[in-house]
Image 1 (spheres, rainbow, N blue to C red):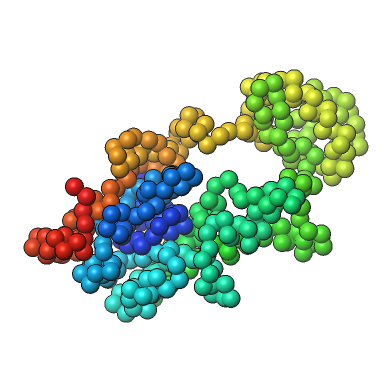
Image 2 (spheres, rainbow, N blue to C red; image 1 turned 120 degrees about the horizontal axis):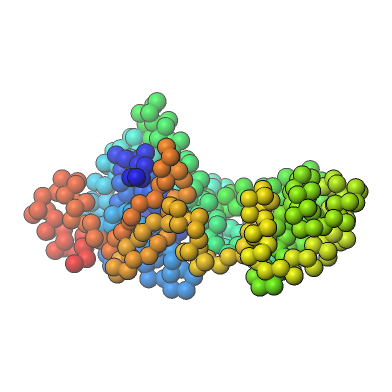
Length: 393
């Protein structure tokens, strides 16, 4: 089946780097929008990151077209303005004021394209911090997420760019809402999403806990769980997570694993009583699970309705049978290598979003994008000869 394309016919021009902005464009492209990514001559530096940044570009930039422009030149900037004039959506995540200095601020763009939805992905929404530079890790530290992730006194950033990606998701939500409003008004608007406020939303449950109880939430490794059994357990080989989150599941869990003594204790039939007796329950359960292999534990739990999970590493997901059913899409990298990467995690109309994608080389689509803007062969040749526009051979 072909993938759904609910945003077919929607054009996007993207001035982005790193993760947050490209996430917006990647999701819109996955939903069928035509996304043109503007890169500097020589390509976005994100392409050349090493270490933990090596996966940023291939994960969040496939399915897009690439045009390389020298925005410091009048001719290159003129092309960018032509792209914006014909776009439905603009996405940018550079430092505050960076596009403004080029005359690509919202007001200037809206003056020539009143229907434009202009999505800015920033560190902070308007306020005392709005001129600061922020990164995912900065937001996690400021917003309390790192404090909640690590052990007490040892803040630890989450193990993925969760704030960048979630901030991108909020940007997409804002863009789609703005497109819907445009159907009624005929006008676009500026949408701003941010790292810091996104982080505050993510830790809002802990803020609410303090408001409700009067006690600060403990970091996750030291938390008092809402359930007695909600933890990782060692087996004979690999660990497994198990959660028993209802009274009915407690009965099922005890019977599945032969914990007859625990089930016979009627004082443990209610969840809060089990939480209070956790120091008595957990050693018995840990000893039992430690005598089994992970496969045996999973076989016991499969199909029971009890929450459980093997403790996987990211590289394990390439062979995950669930993701093999449409959660990964074929991607051709810029060097021609074939890989499989996670697609936009949606099903629409009974169809998964994923489809084979190619990661564009820097400026690979420069010529075709210019042709789509109505530039003739002579104009294109002049722009490329001047260096204002570049295309990789």
